[in-house]
Image (cartoon, rainbow, N blue to C red; front, top):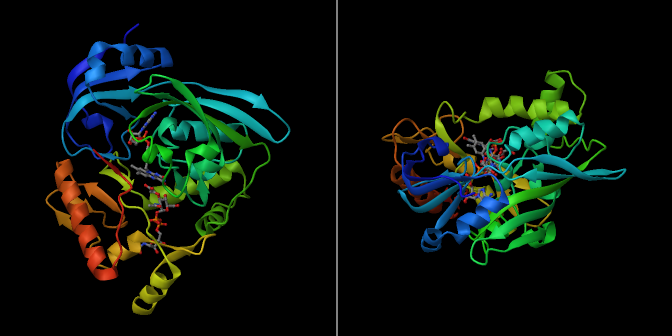
Length: 339
Ligand code: FAD
Ligand code: EPU
């Protein structure tokens, strides 16, 4: 059966920046059959298509002149078990945090540090969501998707997803070309208890809990609630920019000029810098242009104080990029998808 298509539909409730734009067409899909039906409809061949999850990593700068497809494919099911792992198939329309809670309840481990990240499971591989010392790529085994042009269903292995920090094949070669329908995860039966992110061990001590998937998730929830503004209270998309990665050479130069610069060493020779620090120390924390602003406590988060439109938020973002380039000679890349 064909799903219902709405015309000239407001997306305000479908993006966490609360931007009031309209989609020419809007539809909800609940299974793969509905996707194949939609792609066969004559009108859909002429229109561009945008797949939408919770809209927590999107900035709409204008009305969407095409079809917005709201992914609501549900289901969480264990499909294989061995001594070490449970393999789980999850519908792209499940809420990410609900899946984290589901895993903790079964004492499965691997995604507990990613508790409370907004959005749906289908979007989790797109930018390889990460937080508090974990990235989703470490638990993804396979991804099912439908290619919009060829209308074929494809299953891709984790290796072929080209996962990197806030990046994957879905943000590059396959950008806007596929509809992810299910994600297959492999979770550990033995807790991995990843507490290498210092704040987690401090919070566990504070709440007097030993590490377990449940207590780590609770610690992460507590930390996040203190640090990251709640989109239900003030429109935002989490970190607006990625943390920039620079060479050792560039880092050494910056460190001489800015001895307090905050950075993370990773396995490669490159250095990741805290963009929040760069923005704050360029004097931009808390600034406001109309209703578009930089959050007063977390400079990496841009906010919609009330009625900003997407163009105003984008203009503030461009201003920040310009100042950061002048002050540090660094190009800040946006993490948020600008539409
Ligand atoms: P959307 O914003 O709806 O879509 C994001 C992109 O994915 C779009 O380009 C969209 O077209 C595409 N897409 C979505 N679903 C599909 C699909 N099924 N098939 C194909 N394409 C699809 N991210 C982190 O990594 N770590 C964090 O700690 C974090 N914290 C956040 C905190 C807050 C308060 C907010 C608002 C955001 C945060 N984010 C974080 C960003 C965001 O939660 C993630 O990027 C999340 O995965 C987006 O999910 P979504 O369903 O809202 O995707
Ligand atoms: N900092 C400042 N001023 C600020 C903000 C941060 O100086 O206004 C410095 C502080 O020293 C702080 C450090 O930057 O210790 C890091 O800040 P924070 O712990 O808040 O993390 P982040 O680097 O800003 C990244 C992710 C978040 C993720 C957290 C926790 C990116 C782009 N962002 O933020 O992800 O939740 O780490 O792991 O990698 C998201 O992607 O939307 C997101 C929220």
